[in-house]
Length: 281
Image (cartoon, rainbow, N blue to C red; front, side, top):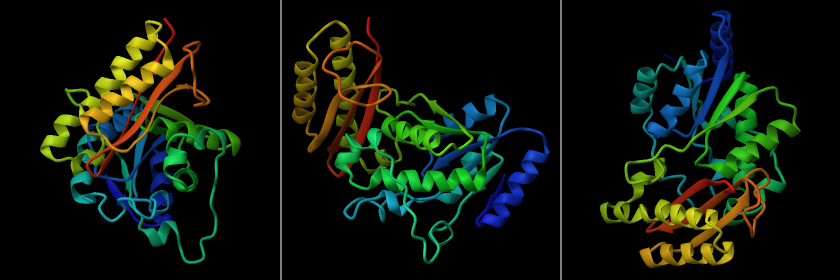
């Protein structure tokens, strides 16, 4: 696996991969890789694609009081994982390469970005949309793979690609979970031992709520129960627990179509997000 750090080398390397006859996949990450990221690489390789992985901790998607400085950075370990997983190229630019002096462009995606994490983290999805657009233009992949754990992010990226006529297929890969159900996340490293034990209450509360909703329970009452369970477990604040249309992410008060149960809540200093697919019976 080759590592490149500037645009010219990246484009030369991608041209070389294309010359070998396979399509190109992009797996964008912020590093601190885990089995969830490797599942994206695996999904791309199963399709016979040459896999380009980007590692860039994007400052524009962090708020002023969020964890940009604390976010784990461990490129050497990440690189070793990617070699083992069979990635072909690591794109590891620095901030100056991505946002050189005078950079003045920002992309905003309306609609699907406005509720949930868009409301809880103002400006976050503008930062995501801008950096993803840049990565897609830089690498020019045939397919880009994203995890469904960040389900709203995936919806934003799909809208971005559709609206801007970017010629790339966007593939969502199912959430990878620990044995106790907690969704894998780089931020799980922030959890203390006790918090890690408590954290499993998030997927448990969502699973119980999803099952109740499928059985016909009142949606609003069921969501209230889930919020109380999280509060009782020690999560605070609870940004949202919501049942949404799986495509538009607009809230639903009845399960009449394919839906997604979304949640975000903080345990100690760690903000956790999760979601489950909910289908009408």
